Image (cartoon, rainbow, N blue to C red; front, side, top):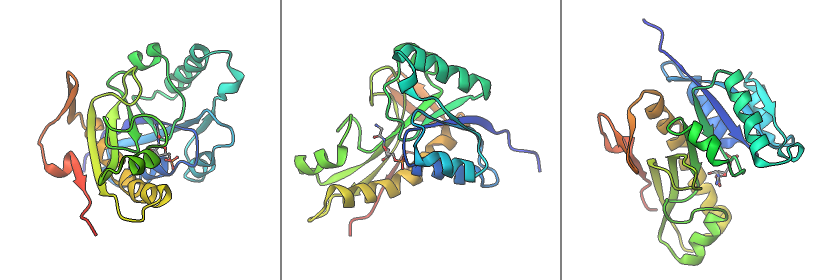
Length: 219
Ligand code: GAR
């Protein structure tokens, strides 16, 4: 059987790294088109670093506090990605704003997971805000990263019901389970060149519903 050509992927984290683990586990499956070659954290204490090391992945810490400004932090980040010959960057709970210069350089090659159905609830505290707004459907989004935060072309989304009695914690857990499904699925599409940016939108070749959106049945 011919070897699958694997795209070199770098994952950026700031915290526990559960989405990172979902990507590492997917990449370990035969036939998955990505190789996670480096995990980079801007926080030395991020729990995800140990989880990456346990999986045998090279890790790098670039502590933003040791950089005078965003430009110098992003330059160090870029150098680490280039050193690892990264082709696609995945932001997985990476909680730093990136400069326009950095996002432009990686445009079309950098994706993010956001815990809401964009364009609703950009930014932080999405589950609390969804509950406050009284929405009945919430979810998560994988999108290409553009200079404006949480705005780029949408690759895949998953929707979950908001239930009576939900707390931010309960809702977050229900959404996170879906994040772990759609992030590896979306990265596969990108690595296979099947998710093409057309203006503000993403077109997926060989379209199947499951390639674009997941809706979790109500309970
Ligand atoms: C995830 O829910 C991710 O969607 C969110 O942070 C969490 C990280 O968890 N990302 C953002 O809010 C980005 N704006 P993880 O470290 O366990 O993957």
